[in-house]
Image (tube, rainbow, N blue to C red; front, top):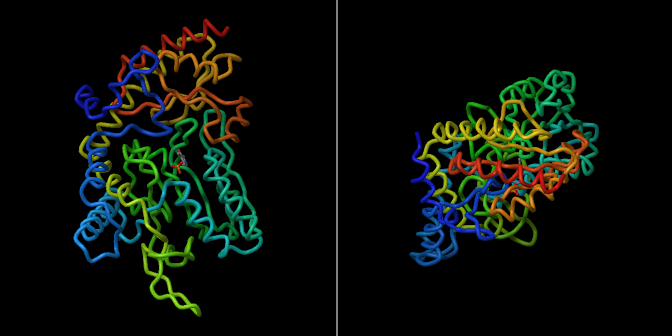
Length: 403
Ligand SMILES: *Cc1c(COP(=O)(O)O)cnc(C)c1O
């Protein structure tokens, strides 16, 4: 068992008050909080060796380069990629997806088909729509069920020889549902389609093994897994990253440049034009070390306790409906009767409780349930049962005030 009080001491922000009440942070699905070791790594970078990488011969540049490349290897090990150069450091999930979508828009042919799941975040919908528009490809949607799981029974029928790509999130950010990505990858591969898995919402809870999954592309953001904002990764199989054209032109991504012809750098630099988020990349490595030191099994055990406790307590509130009941992570998306989720969120905020309200960048899911949005409480391993008790009391209070 984790010593939660000890863990909470790692997060300075958990000490603060909001509106005169101790902060209760249940918006981990939007961004996680940052442990002191990660904050220290950021301060250390700017205090001691801030400089540009891969360029200078001087000591600071060498130190920054070494630490940045060491972070890439930590990320490689964490995701079990075969090679460090299969890890492209990006500004986050959104950019990672855009690199792949933009690349495929020049590789797909008219009439090719791509499948996207009904559970996607806008960042895993819009880039593919743009790609399909450019290439003349057809975007198909794998529907979902009332319990928030995917209609896997329809998946085989949707696949055919024209299917080139399949996109799905590992865990839905709006509902927390864990998708059967092993089965999606396996079935898509039978038809020769490539699969991109959006792991932004899974990686705070699950440690994926990209080789075991045999996934073609896997993307995630540091800021949802105890790291800083503005950095994330694109994992791709070597041969696929080599096949994709570069995303942006600029410094760092070239081998030779003349006005007649430029040749591109090898992996990973081909996709890393310009000065990257050096400090962010290094701090991402520290965040990964931090989470692994706690251990993903321990994280999951604690989160299951919180999820079960909160689900049970919230369900006792009359009129409260939880959306997404299939196998899931520690996310509870709910509404009470006809009360607008925003109004509940505003009252909770007055009581120091941070939740997310709205469509969670997943309007198609809200349309499916015919609701404007939900209140989403997303829990992390540093949350406690006591905080859930306060949340439940506050939700009851909000219900009384608003009905
Ligand atoms: C947060 C999130 C994204 C977008 O991540 P950014 O860090 O904003 O680029 C994409 N997909 C899912 C499932 C998410 O939870």
